[in-house]
Length: 159
Image 1 (cartoon, rainbow, N blue to C red):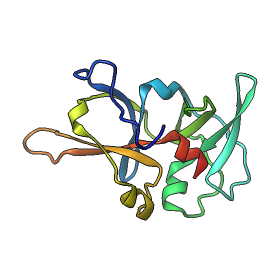
Image 2: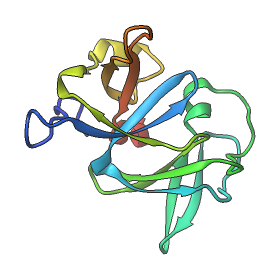
Image 3: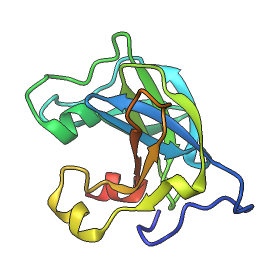
Image 4: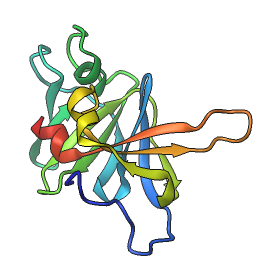
């Protein structure tokens, strides 16, 4: 997804459907149009030296990204599938990839007026260079708004 591209559904009033997941302490999401499926995470191969691994699915090898390790570093060893979920999605170039998350992703309807483009200067200077947009979602009177960063899948695989 191009960072200048606006994530607006065909009907401007319709909320944008996002598949949201937690990478503590962050809340991240992908537009549902990019998500193919969510599975229980099996064994993921790889050296364990980077935040990426590989899994065979539907007759093809798919790169899997451990966002916890990618964003926050650390030597956590191999990507693990123990009590984890695997979110399979596609980039704008139709390349499939996977994201590992410890908690089940959730479907969210986010009002378009709550979504803002992240400035390029922020993206260049922050850990979240892989996010293109941010949504601040009200959570009621007594709770602070939920901040959800919407990932740019092209940057995620290309960064």
